[in-house]
Length: 450
Image (tube, rainbow, N blue to C red; front, side, top):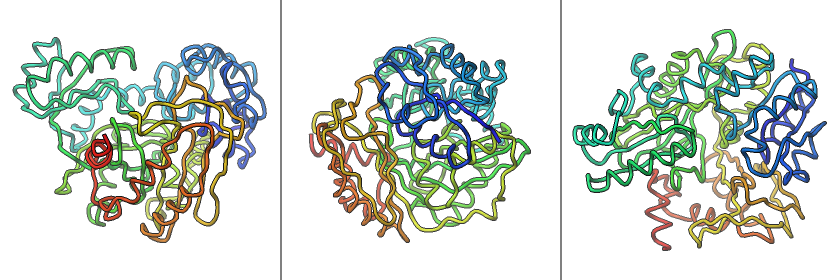
């Protein structure tokens, strides 16, 4: 087992990793930016090292400083969490070259799956269904326009190196194409350092369903069931569930088999997810693979009773998976609400500031993953998510009841949050009946309240 690791992240995921390490008797080193010197993860870790200024590029994306901190503190491995450097193949390769264990898949897999166009090609060869689209390189705007005419509208323009909902544009007609093409290129360059794009057909109002994968160094790959991730705004997830109320057992089993096939196609190791789009007829398509722990991993932990972060650490320590696919049982239902410091009534504007009052819900079936505390100042430099509220019940109805109770109890003073907005989702009849897709929030809540 690894003895000491550095956590190359901040916020609730860094706290989450520290907790798992403590239970496995692994020492931890936190990194922090100058603005994060009082952050909870920096206080909780066994050691903490400042790696740069407030801007991400100077600290949490500063590969040289992070690796130097790892070497100077005698760490054997680095856990990247999600975001920041978690899907950066260059960083994973640098770790390998420095004889530091990157707690995730190898850099070759990250590189392959990070290039969405190449990932499509690999999945097609593995007979994994993909969304129909153009398979080659797009050489120019005129070339892209020609492809669009052949595919037909509506269509999606996507960043080849994309992820996290960035670099994606839906184009409904030729008149909208140029503006969206240029916007996607600019966003791709800004987010990923390159502007290659690909084009595929647009599946209207699909479900976004992902399967949690675990793979070890011995060729064993299993899935831990699915998560329903269709409640999104601007391609960013807002609320997730496990299992999905849309899938029947036949479709669930079929998608699980395909998810493992996809993971085996790249000899996947550690934790990851296979992301699918599912149309209203139950036809599903591979969308992408996320080569990291997901924000929404707690709902899977609740229904499987498997600690995914601990499994990541065990796999990175060269241990075999302790269970086979037939050992995995999904029991009950779990829901996660992302708690953000943002103003839903003002176009979800981020709302940094000092937390002046705080009451965190608890009780049976309630879990809170967060790094906030009374007096903590939410900085303006990072993502607006300040916590995750997770509830578990014997069935979906019970999980919803618990979530509404917990949201009622959750009190955060001093900053505006989306707690009331999350409650509004839970109160909507279409959500209660499981009748929603990726368009739900925009069509039923945001536009309605505009």
